[in-house]
Image (tube, rainbow, N blue to C red; front, side):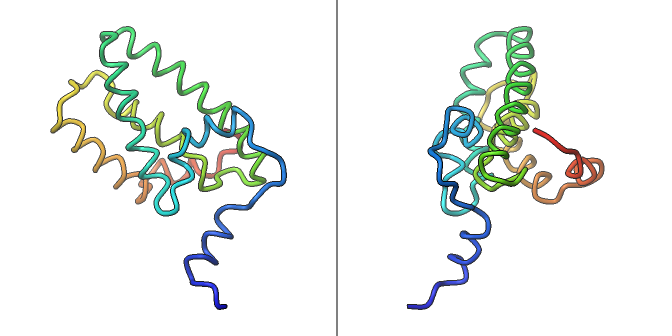
Length: 142
């Protein structure tokens, strides 16, 4: 039986550690989002929307405080998950997309046009990685 080209890509993109994933790994994968068979980053960004809607009820000050705390938590989770997967930016690690989406809509109203526009622009810039995002890929750690 011949493996498909996608299967070869998936095996390179997702090493399979022997140990069971712990809570940091599951948080970094944002539950099932990071394990999507195609475009896990897109699913991670979509997975941020329910959290955004919940946090938007806190008011501006609460949203900013929780989002900044979440960004710190995301860095810790990504670092620990990177050790688990054996690579800093393994494809199941999508918590950076979640934190990035929350930051991209900070202080914006939770409306459908805002969500759709923010989602599309965030994915575009996350894939394109213009300056300084491209240079930040060289940073080590979470």
